[in-house]
Figure (tube, rainbow, N blue to C red):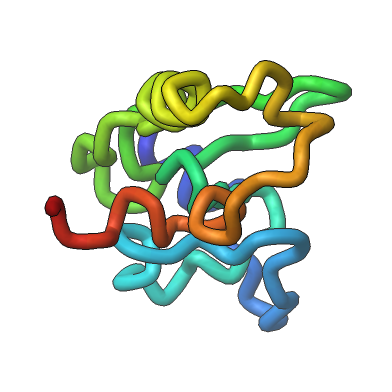
Length: 107
């Protein structure tokens, strides 16, 4: 199965990644230049767009290693604790628009 994924997603012509280029774990793989995998730094999530939805990845498509746990629930929980009722419509603090909120050292 992994061989199929590698053959299908490998882009030897050097096409660049669209939207958000994966970072972190998948950044170490030279074949990560495919535009089928997106990365959302806010949640530390990798996904394959599928119609209007996303298929989240739990394992690296290139080596099979387990990817970090999503931080999506923590993101929502922390914003709720700050009084943000609808994060999709609210003006969020700058750190919550990137990975800064979870990369910052604990106080």
